[in-house]
Image (cartoon, rainbow, N blue to C red; front, side):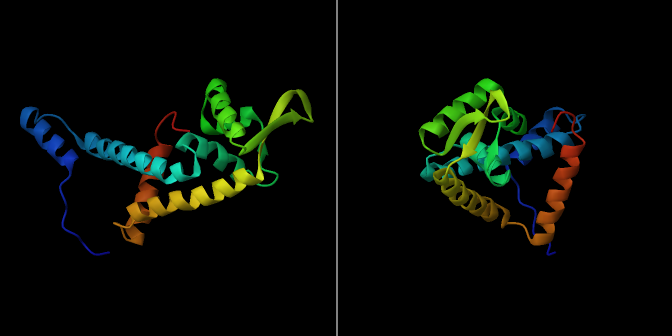
Length: 170
């Protein structure tokens, strides 16, 4: 792993300002979470742009991707989708309505529960999600290219540890 000169970023400026006015503060958490927040916001915007050519938003991508990852026949209940995506049933209904109108999924009665529904990825939805996941990964891979493989692996490990140690992170 080659050592690169440390670059300054906007979070460094904020930390320097706090050090000037409140030198008593330990700003390590602010340094970490400030960068995580900025990175999340930036990458979120880039992912929206990556999915836009497919006519889907990030939230809609998440629904389609969850169905795709479930394996054939790419079917889950709305409740399973809501639980996986940490969405209210109302929020899920809106996404399902839009995706169904676009022909990317279909809702049908659950043959095992007369009161329940099943949500199934259509052939069109399968094509869209397979293309969109590739486009999204390309954006993420490009962003990660500033790190070598060892650094990327270490970052993934550190973030996994942080997430595991954070209550309610699911």
